[in-house]
Amino acid sequence: MRIAIVFLILAAFTGSFLYWLIGQYPGFVLLSVGATAVQFTLWTGVVAALALWLVLRLLFSLLRALVMPGLHLTSNWQAKKQQKNSRLTYRGLLDLAEGRWASACQQLSKSAANSELGLINYLGAASAAAELGNEQEANRLLDLAEKADTRNELAVALTRVRLLVGSGGYAEALPILQSLHGRHPKHPYILGLLEKSYRHLQQWDQLEKLLADLRANKVMDADGLRQLEILVRAEQLGNLAKNLDPDMAKNKQALADLWGRTAKNVRLAPSVITSHAELLSQLGEAALAEKELRKAIKNSWDKGLLRAYGQLGGELTSAQLKTAEAWLKEQPDNPDLLLTLARLCQRSELWGKARDYLEAALRLENRSEIYAELAEVLGRLGEHDKSLQLYREGLLAVTKAEVPAVAVA
Image (cartoon, rainbow, N blue to C red; front, side, top):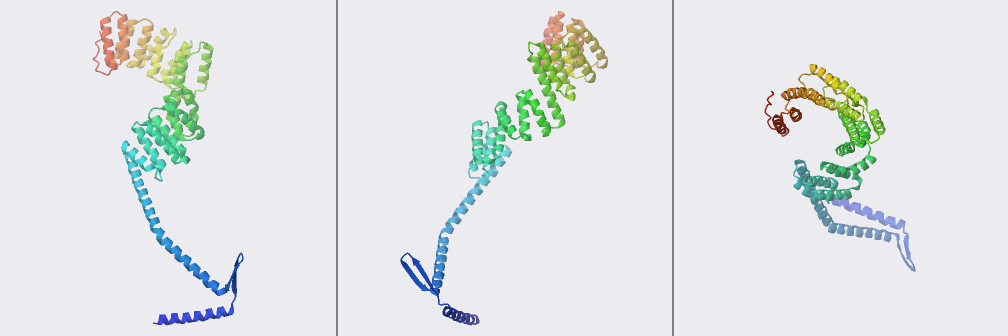
């Protein structure tokens, strides 16, 4: 009751104030449009403006009441669709991690078009397709990935290259990798894939040029990098030996250039020394080759070094035999040294001594090449039946079958 009285008092006061205000400021408003003019009092204009504002508010409220339910329904539908795509993406990535390639490919590719992670979906689906051996589908999905997000072309290109390398397509991957390396010279993953491709394609000169980048960007540890340098140099020396020029002067200059840019720690590697010595021998420098091998063998009884020493060409066989026999006092149970001695004896046509060394080596190690060498020597000595038996036993050794102990006469 009291509230109603308060409202009546306020209404009376407001009405009185408005009446006074209208009396104090009578004013008028004139609207003219072309030849038509309309005149009305100021307060009539104020009331008309308020009425128009109320009408517009009512129309806006009515329109909102009609439209909002539809917008809300659309929003709910889109949210549900996004949730469905998210579930498909989740299950697809889980299947990809668990090796369920067919399911992963299906779910990731199905949800990719309407997913906020479309690029990830396509890349995952392409990886799954590649695991299934479906190269055409993998390439199609990678093309879609490129269109889905043009800002991340590096991710797509690296995935394409990784799939090619994984399937052994090094030749196809190499041009892409070289292009990526030109644009991203310090990217460790690109450098690693490029190194792997060069190695499998046996492009040793290109790999040598890459060594500086591999070292600067710490793609490999120090030991791994040294082993790679050793491999590169040994293979380059081997290729030079296989592709000698008729002009010996050119060959010697090529060897000098290659050896001149070889690091000291790489020169000490047995495989590099072996390749270098064999090439020296081919170039008529057998004495230098023998000296290099002899010095290296004193530091390491490496199998490759001993083999190269036994197969070295030239007229040093007699001196080599004396040197190797002196080594035998230090290494009496070294089958590789015994095999080297046997080969030196064969070159000197000392068939009996060669047989003794080979039989001693065979007692220490059942190796197919020792069987073959001994069979050859026995053939030279006229023991053809035993020679054939040893060839057979050597063949069994190659196939990793049980080799019976050979009876030494």
